[in-house]
Length: 505
Image 1 (cartoon, helix red, strand yellow):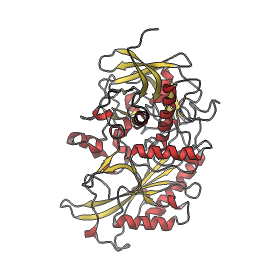
Image 2 (spheres, helix red, strand yellow; image 1 turned 180 degrees about the vertical axis):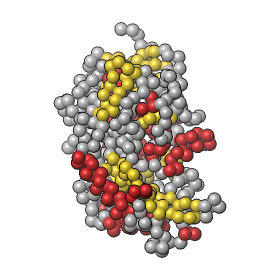
Image 3 (cartoon, helix red, strand yellow; image 1 turned 90 degrees about the vertical axis):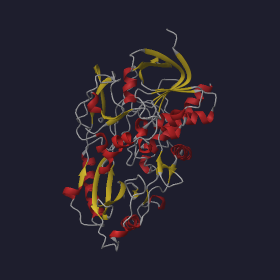
Image 4 (cartoon, helix red, strand yellow; image 1 turned 180 degrees about the horizontal axis):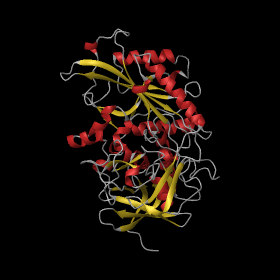
């Protein structure tokens, strides 16, 4: 056995939200624990892990935020972009890339994408943080611990219950939604303002929570026991089948490989690259890559009938500062009685002189999809993607039950829209292609027993391993209907706690 090139107490693979939460919670519990964090991608801008919404660089702002002006999230990665022209990981540009553009077969989930940059998806996400309920919850019989971990996740993300709105039109929309869904679900899951992971500056500007805000040393240093290694891709876990010695990492600029040894390793790369790394390392439990889940994504937009609601066009609200929306509203799912998660983003359109023209109610309904092993990722033994890791094919489809519920969602979206104005579902709504939400879960799911249906235990510890932990949305075992980040962060809270126990042992 060769000597390691470096050693640390904790190795975190992935610098996104999940990795930064693990680092923060470990540091809060122990100032002495040494932490190394690796990420294959480069930083975006001067501060690693800063959310691109908050950048002061106008070029970065335009590159990463202008595509969101459409209000359709999947456009963030582009519309049918050509295959990546990058021949290797070093020349792969920082940002989000469709997985098809970096050498994978994603025809079954054409909008599936992943980040290649320090901060991962945490530099790009919408910062929307609805909390899970009902079948989304995985408390494994301990609801008290679940609630504590969920509260810790909220604190780490800086969740604010009322971030954008309500304006007067927003109040109108909420009132209509509350009338339609009166008596459906508990009071705390009535239509309401959307909770978001934001910090409000004294001047009123909203700053999104990115990894550098969760764990400041990631972006600005100042912690002598923490090391961030960008452009450092973990290509294999060095293990004996029971214990992980550490990781073999590739310097994507020079091509050099070395070993980082660690007492505990937490992998939180994302729902695709976490199982990809395990597969490349020969860690291949039956559930690896299986149970891939993503809710269906219905979107629509309707112009608010101002006369119907007695609103004055000249008095329509403008989005504050650099925001695109005047209101961010939430229609929570409430089980069979109301199975859809609703995200409502309102916008005032103005003319070239800045005078209000109309007010749009932007509607998205997320429809739950059955969790089943047939949906998943099939890795190749022979071919690699642009990063040099095993390439894969996504296998994903809707069941008859899924399609029936999507049909009901279309009807529900139309019924909601028609409460606000004239609506043509043929031209003003769409079912977006799979992968569009970027809310992918299940590929390294947790479970209560090593029975072939899970990859790790409820605390993220990989079955049969003493010191290997997983965190992130891929660990979530339930069919999440809403935005998945807050739910996935619970797995980072648990992995941090479990890794600390291993380090202290």
